[in-house]
Image (tube, rainbow over all chains, first blue to last red; front, side):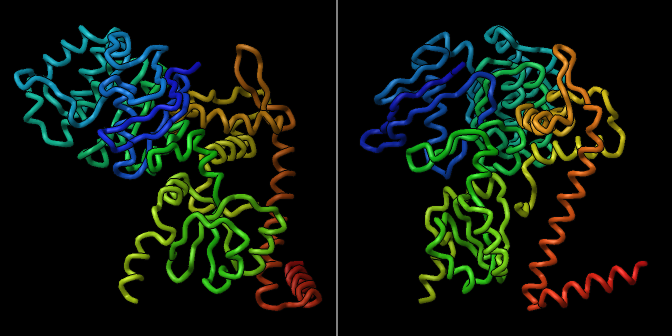
Length: 301
Length: 123
């Protein structure tokens, strides 16, 4: 069953198109990683789903409703980011009381235990928290609210490695016990990829990829070898990304080869390997074929 | 067969881990296998990924499902795995040997002689 459906949804800020004719479905109880370069439109997409901002055209449905100004969507959804606003006067303990009132599935005991574990005293005020502590607190609210639709936009900003690991673990454990639909955006894809079922890659106002994380990984192969040897194959493959791996040249290419072709490459001394999901993501979103090296190469000329 | 860049996909790692549990006898014939949720907890991964790992073993009939009870190790799972690994691992090593020989420009006869002399050295 689909919890979120986009049909030709476009979002414009004045004349600037941020998302262009997006069509996609998010299934119930799936954890989806929302990834893309800075400014690709991740936050805009999630804020539209949350009903915080209105689609410019097209049809967007969340729980079968148009999310903008929908109380139903609000009550069943939580959007966690580092700008999550809480009144200055409230202590952390007061915020928990309000959450308990608003969110039907709120688990107060879990919230309190997690805050204690992360050393966030209930008597502290939200605005005095450090960046990392504030992110941790917000993440705890996101987990303990157990909303049928839970969205985290860059939840780990400022968290140290240990806190990030604990957050991923806590989210996974609570998800296993209480499955729900989760959207998680982050620039640290390599850290969170084990947690994800699906990837939604936003690339230049468009959906670059949406599907199981394994499928993203299996779209590509890495070829590594001496530049002059690789170049003899340049016309045969669709090269998505080129880079230098030490003294060797690495190409990320579309994974469409026969076994005979692969053996041919190996015999020419080229290393053929699978790529990680993060590498696949980087390859797909690298804006120029040569990466940042192109900038320096152009200056040397 | 592909060489894995850095790491293998997690679901394949899960499948291999389960296979090793069967090979080394930790999981015996008709023992109950971990559920996808137990595997997800254990390895800190998405349950769907753990499910994919289990599917590999189900498809290979190394494990079987009992309705409402869970998943169990097939009676011939260990034998199947042992013969699969022998065939697979050995083939891979032979292919690597041929690649290296090719790179060094070693002829077929020379390679055979090399293998034969190694074999004699052991006997």
